[in-house]
Image (spheres, rainbow over the protein chains, first blue to last red):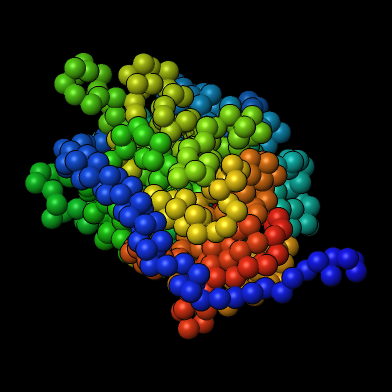
Length: 57
Length: 496
């Protein structure tokens, strides 16, 4: 227990943007948007048929 | 008069139901006997033995009575307006009648009810039966408490409501909408159960021809109904890709039933006479086993390998009006339990999601963000594999879970101090072993009311590998290190 207490470090808190640059944020955002845009394009194309599809069984 | 329970599978129960059909529905001996035999074969055979059943009639069923006055009463052929109710109990000895403790015993042993209505094609009406008494019940589903009286005694069962279609006032699509609303209406104050005439009324301005007998609904009409029942629903096509099934999996994992429109044809080549268009309600999935967790493949996002819980091969649980409740099949072959090829060929084409109005962020976006945001943390790209389990939770339920959880005090404080909306998306991070043993090693929390994906706008907290990114009480984004790195129990409140 004594050893555990000794090893336990205090939590250090900093402003996120003092650690990570806006460039890093933009780089990660671009990857997310690329995946999302691909998904959205596929959805838009597929939605066209929803009107005609009757379910009755 | 108090009705005696009969042991299931006995001639006494068979004869009691036949007698009820003859007296209540006016059916002849042969019809009543055939219908009872079919009922036993299809609906009783999936239940465990040693059950006791109370047969009561005449019974006024709110759903059938509504169909009766809206439709059946106008027919030349006389149709009964009353039903028969079967109530199921475990371990109840017929000799219990007369026992002064009967009420207490029945409250504990009650496992649900099934309404029999005089609709000859499909006689099973509204039913709510606990999964406990099904032979195959190794699954997790959305459940709610449904009240019902037996012999005048008010009791409750925890189940998902179901019904077979009567094929005239309600076919599969209306039945799926009805079951969804019966579930939400019994569980949450924001919603109300609906009757068949309510569904017809809501669609009146959407229909260009007569509405009864029903000839089915389109997927868009199903969404339109949900929109008029206090939801902000979404309709999404399903093209058989992992991300399509993943979206269904994430919402089901969130405790939201999803209406699936399935069909066996995508073009004109399928024989016209064999074409099927059907609606089923997906309400849960079987428990994942070690083998399926170890078999699922991973995917890489910029050097980190991920395993998505939604990609694990597992059968999902359906409410299908052609089957007893809790039918199970894989999402890729949602009608494999049917005998005929034309049904087995069915695939999911659309999914209708009845969502609470403020759920604006979608699970696929949550996963894109989670897999990319983890790159902000140091030491994560060391070749390890990270598993993701994605689900919605109400912030109240989640904070309650956090209070009772075995996670470290520092983590609890961090989460409990977050200013959260009514619903949050949670991504639990772990390993394959963590999925099997139901523990997590990190998590991400997203604001479900924020659809913006950039600049970490919707991120409320990310905790993994001894680091945390979170919003403080002034909504400023913080980065913390030396956060305790421990395992904690996963959130398992959505499905039971």
